[in-house]
Image 1 (cartoon, rainbow, N blue to C red):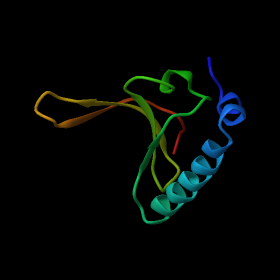
Image 2 (image 1 turned 135 degrees about the vertical axis):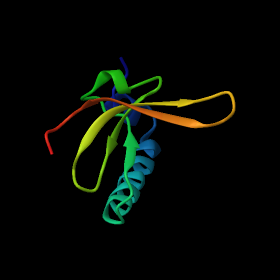
Image 3 (image 1 turned 90 degrees about the vertical axis):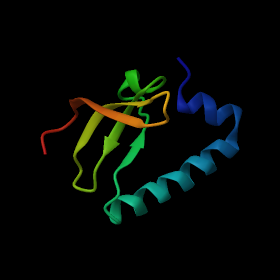
Length: 84
């Protein structure tokens, strides 16, 4: 499995991009907008339809996001990651 460390070693610019994305995510959470991301701590989110969804309250869930043929985005909570 490729790690972020591997990616940053091969493409140092990606680290700068990710740091900017981190700042943007912080701003969205401050505004009360949930964010979605992949996290090495949860390997199932590193590819495919599974993501971590985080709310400004700190609540986190593994969710499945699926785009239907008629272009509706469906979201299913798979499991909670913390007990908030």
